[in-house]
Length: 304
Image 1 (cartoon, rainbow, N blue to C red):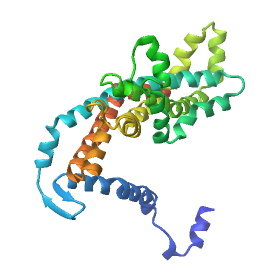
Image 2: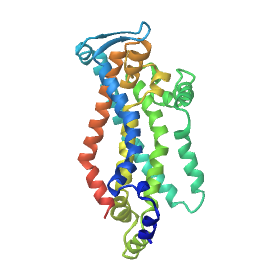
Image 3: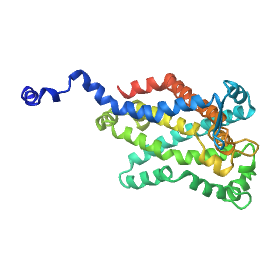
Image 4: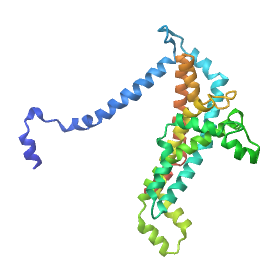
């Protein structure tokens, strides 16, 4: 049949088989070039220039921008805050989303309702939700000060150099649980039921069935959720900019917020491009370290 179809097509309209893979990969390669390679190359080039967008003047300065920004205490503090925020949020997001997915998956009914409830923060606009959360943390009359503040004495979180970043981490964790939960639910749906039935017949309890059957099957889902949560944590901007604007005294300023301040507020395009490059490098190094540390083991566990 294939030979008959090929014979019916004129020779000038036939595509040699060796060109078919190149034709199939061309759309993806074009998308990658236009939306990733070209912008990244432009950002890297701008780090070497003093570009003033208002006057449209551009002057080559070489590595002087790099020397000025990399040695600045602002970049060091923003990098430390970004890493600390990721350490506060990523374990909470992955852990709570796994627990939520296990609970919803075990429900005999109303599972769809609870999936929607947990996923709503993910589809909500983070800037708008940050305004609501800022009201909850309002000093004196906010819900947090009226409840937790009275019990622990920890008040006025957003104006405290020690409590402001944990307050923002609470919001980030609340917003990130829904997307990771969906990943775990997808992984749970792929676990064969007969394995749980066999484990139950062999006398395995709920914990042993989870540890030896469910958890290994969730290896790819866990790795994907961990990478996505880490990437989003390192790029945090909305809630920081809305709630504290990097304050107090730079205690909550992250790399994304510092990039906005340099590139948009100060119109220092070269410095903003350097911070953007540092942020990209930090994301790549962190994700690669996670994959090398445990990612391959988790993926092999899921493929068993």
